[in-house]
Length: 255
Image (tube, rainbow, N blue to C red; front, side, top):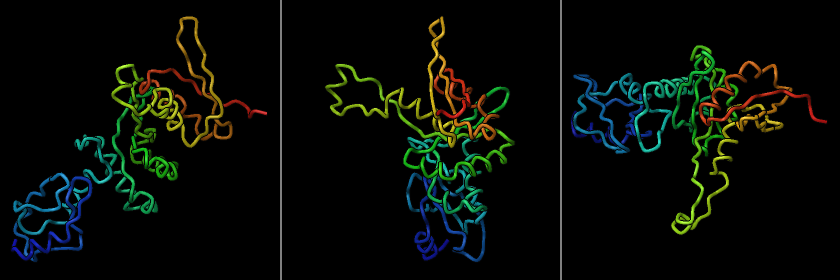
């Protein structure tokens, strides 16, 4: 690649997550001699000399989609399953009317859980983006469940639990622990995320004779026909993520 072409290419390069992206409309050479290696660089807006000739749009697309809709904490690479979720979200962004909603959204991680002889997908999203995801969650879940053979899909916010301060930690951390970072608050919020968009209208804690507890969650009766087939999955997912037992009921409306 000539020096002028390289400089022109540098002006068109954009950074998305930790990958360099070249717009499909731009080409630097009319003759393609060889597709070089598209080096994975950490937020470095410069393409190194190992790239020879024009980078084809197919090749750019392959490298770009691997991380397009996922940014993991610590800059770690997504695994194969997380990459498949990222690709599915990108396909929805490119090929559906969700494009304007998904353009600025991304996930932080995803996992697949075994629930009642069926696999479910848990997708974690950054807390600042959670409300935006929830605005389109009903449509998004429906489309993803089609793509992943009917597996139940849930979106939850990625929250961090801070340990209860001790006498020693109080002197080091002068800032008081936010209530939203307590274990109870995080677990309660997780439960709300799992059943969203169904509203939790009541909650009871049942203590058994052996001292174990079961949380009885009352969901909106009006949503029973839409969500009843998923409540066993919700209970299993919550148990695996928190270690807590939960049951769901649809009581008659409170008077």
